[in-house]
Image (cartoon, rainbow, N blue to C red; front, side):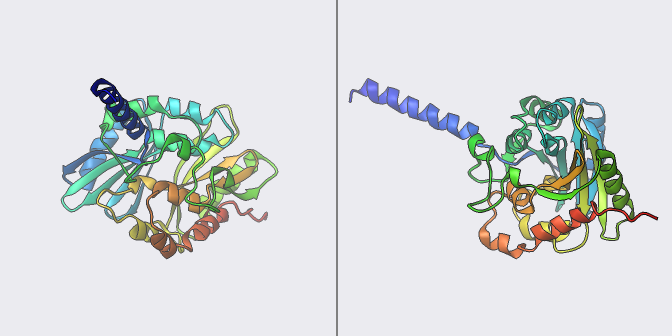
Length: 293
């Protein structure tokens, strides 16, 4: 092979590998790490969001050193409306975590979650959020995942995919399903906290965000076991419950947790083996029919 041919081949291999690396996605982006307090960072982040194209739809503090701001966006809602069950993607989570004297500000990577939830790459939303908070470093997976793998993601063989979401209950109408979930969020005794409620335009779909405060799937316990890396996955929370038509669904716990922690080892997964079922039971309790008087 001539020197010229060798040089051309080397350049092609370089750009191919570069393109491949750029295509690999990770679940979160670190917008900033600044010295300060969680409360001050929350005030600053809220102010940025309130003067932007994003809408704050809820806030949640799962434990003392962490907070989540849930947001939506017109482009996000439009993408969610393009397919049945697209409502799972209607809200992005922004996480703030106090780590020592610093606060990590991160957010769910729109391209990662949009691809995994099959509503598109959400590049417009990603650009808008990056310009607002900071484009930052992608993290949450050492190697990253390709768009192809994400679009049909599952942790390993025999584990659930997106399509294997849990049907929690069925009602006579969309209105009845909504009324049941809303009332149970107010009256439940299981420490289940309402975080947000977002309707999908043009569809009978509403996404609820639910904080889980008790049982084997409670947010504190699950995150204490799984979220041990330097950069925190706070923007994993809260879980979603989707009312679609007259039915109530939730993503399978094994799918949802693995998607948020794609590098989670099987040993760690086994430590929370009871969590997916407990999360399902907690969310299903919100879809339990209310006895008539």
